[in-house]
Length: 394
Image 1 (cartoon, rainbow, N blue to C red):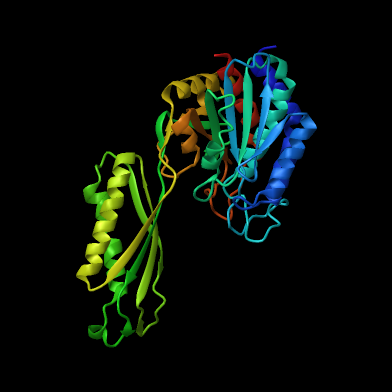
Image 2: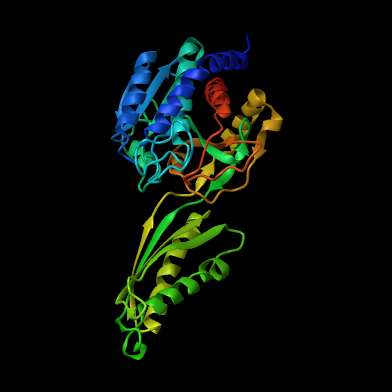
């Protein structure tokens, strides 16, 4: 039986079991670096399969399947584990029972899918001509993220992995399809926090104050020139402010105003230059309006770059497994991912797994109504298994 048909057969046989596991994970979400029950569930599942594992990055787990040739290639597959601080607002029978915590980014599916891969590859272990590492990674949703901790612990160096592949749920793509892009794919992400300091007082006497509200407002508007005037239009860049805290009142001008936002781009050199410009502009605007400001730019995940050689191979294997019509060459995505750290160290490919329903509007990721079309599960675990075995053989 051809390899893809063998994998599809096993995936079909274990589908219901993996579906149950996914629903359990969805019902019991945990926040970043607090994935204790999730970690225990993964370890128990691996123990049931007789697959050895090691703990990593506090709550993470790395499992290893060694085939016939331990000195051959080593391929890693990654799933992130953490949920988000969102109150779920769905009608699912298995909705989150943890108040204010939800798998609104599909990491429950990522984990369940990789457990399905573990099951499939265990059945095919004698046919694996190398080593496969399964990375169950904590804390993708908060800085500095779990990927960097895993890299710091050097568990991917013995043996050193030759390539790493990851997938991410995408409700805007119909279930049964995948999206892939080689080269630059996802943006870097930095957190921008600005404290504007003035002299508050009575709102009826603005001439006696140095109004930090006006200064903060002017800073926000002026900083839009970072994108519109200082940035090369060919480089995708976003600067958005989503939080302002003035904490005054209708007739009270406060002493301080706090602003928080995000800066994202696809160019690491421009990223550094933009940080300097943000600081220069904010300080000069504040000074010009009689105020001061403190600026903290917390450097987050880098730009995610898909290795072109590996991605071409992955694309060809996807065609073999799911067919041309089910593959979408996707555009750049201005979201960020700490998978980018793996991509800085190893040949990497990160692709999008379609989880959308074809006959209705699909709420986006990171929203309380986000749902996953579970019809994708069988293909998700089968495809990852196929990609691992084909890349080892190649």
